[in-house]
Amino acid sequence: MLNKKFFIMIMVLAAAATVSAQVKVAVIDVQRVVTESDAGKEALGKLKGLQDSKIAEGQKLQQELDALKEQLSKQRFTLSDEKIEAMGKTIQDKGIELKRFQDDAQRELDDARRKALGGLEQRILPVINTVGKEKGLTLIFNKFQSGLVYADDAVDITDEVIRRFNTAQ
Image (cartoon, rainbow, N blue to C red; front, side, top):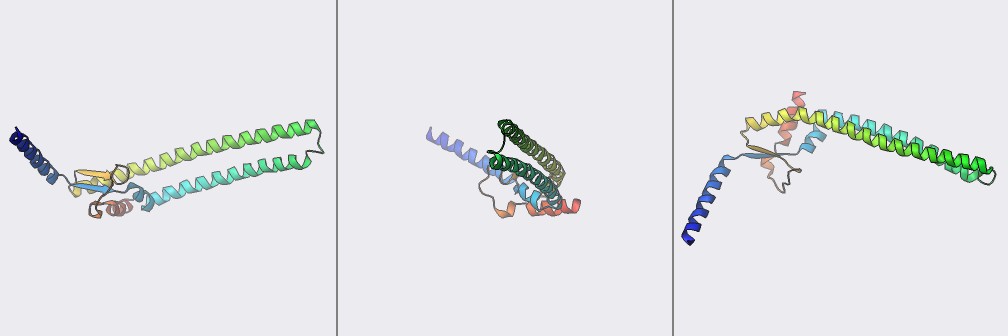
């Protein structure tokens, strides 16, 4: 019985060794391709511009709200109850406007990021596929999103993909 188990284990190990000898694996750091490729830098620059404009617009609304709060604080004792109530309502409305703006801006930024990076991914994948086929690779893993803990730099094709992607553009 022990010899039979030992024989089966040897056969499984031999089969695994044969399969692993035929499998060529590489890794790619897709995040690096996005941040270092020309098209990725352009897309990230546009996203940063949109983000900066939304931040500036949000800061303007926040300053308007702060100014209203300060005005109410300074004039509280000289205003009638009706005026205080009206200013309180204006402050509340401005706070709601700011919150809606922030939510809308975040949604718009998320959508823009998803579209830009999705479009970039669609343009990068053919380059990755070409490199994989030319190198005779069986598998290409996304270096940091695949659960991979370690990969030798020799199997990293990121630099080659960035170079080819830049020249393909």
